[in-house]
Amino acid sequence: MRDPYEVLGVQRTASAAEIKSAFRKLAKKHHPDANKNDPKAAARFAELNTANEILGDEDKRKQFDSGEIDAEGKPRFQGFPGGGRAGAAPGGGFEYSFRTGGGPGGAGGGAAFEDILNSMFGGAGPRGRAGARTFEYEAAPDLDLNVTMTISLEESVHGGGKRVRLPTGKELDVRIPKGVTSGQQIRLKGQGESVPGHPPGDVLITLTVAPHHLFKVDGSDLRVDLPITLYEAVLGAKVRVPTLDGAVELSIPKNTTSGRSFRLKGKGMPKGKAAGDLFVTVRIALPDGADADLEALMEKWRSHHPYNPRSGVD
Image (cartoon, rainbow, N blue to C red; front, side, top):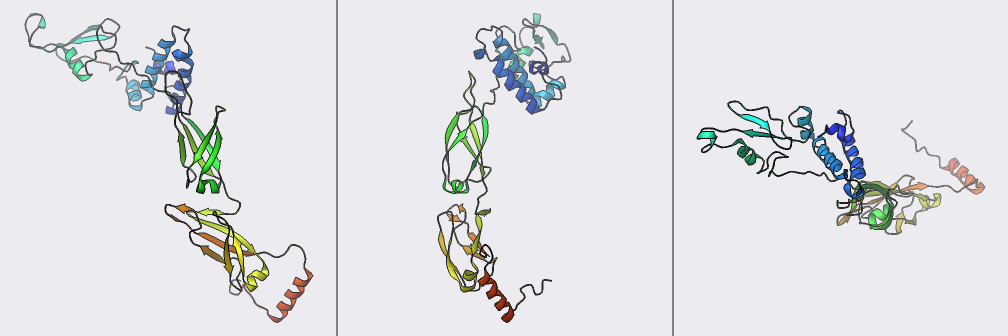
């Protein structure tokens, strides 16, 4: 068995992500089902799996780097004190015998060391010995696909259907649940990548709620600026206010100052059985362009009713 770093084509300083990426790339390339006319494909694929089994596991990688296990993941035995003997076994492994007491030839009353190994490894001897079990580990490739989807504020609140395009070019219809927020994920089982011999991966869709042209999200509350006329601010009025559930009517009291906020309870973001609130801040908007009558009125007002709203500020 070759050095697992050499098998995966990575440096000994490679990160876990680099090892995972190298294995995925090579597994797709050398999978037996994708190389049916190549008799050596199965052996290469098995070698890749063994290398990934060691380097893809942090503890096993440390054991290999420190020489505790070999390139096949088997412990490197250093021998035992007191009368043990070791010899090469068929198939390239090692056979260890350790007997105590007993009659001629070591038979009877003694326990062979292979019995100890069997008790440790569930009855499996070293790989390559006749009659021993062989463990084959095949790490499943990562076949999940991660995509992002931008949805509107209304879609996040009310839910709905939307179409998403995967990196593979495939398009899927997605059902968006009610009340989702940015960062939440939708999982589509079995819609990811596929490799012969493995179940297909999933599609993981990370949602992002786009900024709204009117509303600003503040936790479970919403905030909106509402333009009103000068005469509505002075004389009072009933005005229409947009909400996520349609427009509602808001009463503006007489002499309302620009920047004053009004609270509409339960008109914010849904939150379980309850909902947040909608805070409406009024902004006085003057008419576009010059207006001689308005200017004359303001000059008259300034002469007869002067006041300083910035008193105590400067």
